[in-house]
Image 1: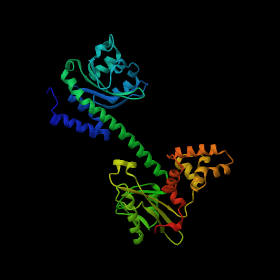
Image 2: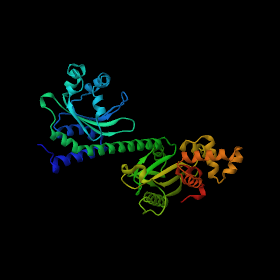
Image 3: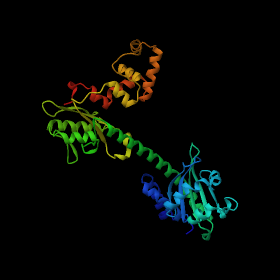
Image 4: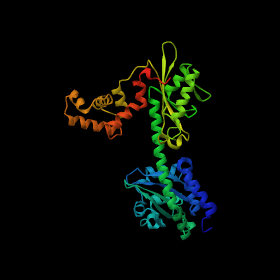
Length: 390
């Protein structure tokens, strides 16, 4: 067949390609599908880097066995006969030929006889996908053995028609990969907190709980998880909690009437549990949650308090001097007053304030103070019991 069947073969290949961007195992299989579609028996997709050891294989056909991959990485990478070819590849263009064009007497070399020939690499199409700022760029290489003959114009047209989609799929794959890393780091950070952190949907169904929250659910009967849902034994407060969760979860959609709230749960005559319900912006987790959600912070009222300056240093990476200034600003003190208290010039205080704003993602004092006072991590520590929502 000289042309891809647009209604079936081509469309199925594109569906598989774009689906694979969020599926590592699916992406791993794409090299084989590309090889079959372009009349090749061997294919490799990766990122070539001029830095030794920095190149990556993203997808490859089964002839690249673990032993062959290891041999290349430990021995043949140093010989690297493809460098001249790779440097000729312009993103979006094709380079075709065979191993005899690489270098004089290449077919008598060790890398050809012990590596290329074993892989069946003789005729080659190399396609540049996208060049990166650091000098690396993504490429796709397709190969046929000597007896199969050279790639035809039809094969080259097929690969050319696929290249824009490969470029977009690689960009999506990279974006999704970064998001997964960021989400993984965020969940890891939530796990390390000494206060309970739970993520729930608008109905209170539990989506995530860190270790501290799980310990709280097990250690007392007032707050628990029942049938997968956050449950308070006190019926009135249960309704208040679920209402706050529903409102917080729907803030981004415009349906919510509020932004959560603060509840105090009496565990026994001596102990209380504070719950802070806050919106969880969809932009934080994107498609990984797929439902409107809220985040619930919880801790015992008699837990050891943490000074505001210490929280600011932990949360934002502030120095002690920056945290001291941030706390003073949050308490309503002006820059001149802060300067006089610290016995430093007003210019020094202004410079310190700019560093505080930069580290916390703000450009002005008013926005910094507003966000600081609304920060759910700090609210539990600083909220007075008399301001409870229940």
